[in-house]
Image 1 (cartoon, helix red, strand yellow):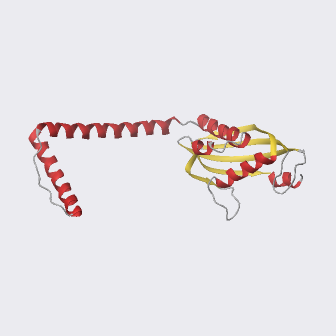
Image 2 (cartoon, one colour; image 1 turned 90 degrees about the vertical axis):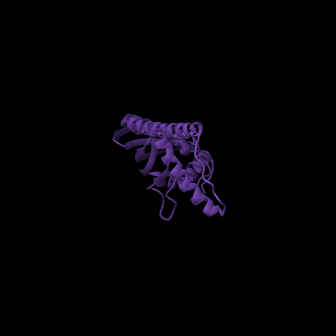
Length: 198
């Protein structure tokens, strides 16, 4: 058995090394593996295969573990950290690399950049920001929520100087999640009416 597997490995290794030597423009002289070398190679192959299989099992378990309740927790955490606290770094943790903001203005990027810029400016122009989750529903990979954002206009925002006014914005949003991260986002709000009333 040893010699059969060793022979197969030898032939496979020889083919690869010949191709590599042709590309590097050098000469390859084939050699038979000793039993120690053979067992070392087999150990590497087996351990690499085990690690790959273990990684796939862990990934599958992670995918299976995300329940609608857990998805709700992710969306609520994002609202509290990002919208309420202004923590823009949370986007790296809770938004997927393929995140799409379907509510971005026309001709604007559909990634998280518009949202990050808005929240940064919003936190400069407003203080005492609070996000109240009024209702949250989840089914499979979708989470929908209704929220109320309250704040005080204490700084310049969209060309308007501080008025000291307290504002209230009503928002309905829908998010899609995969593997514990938000991949798609839609929202409807009365934000522009609130700004016009400042």
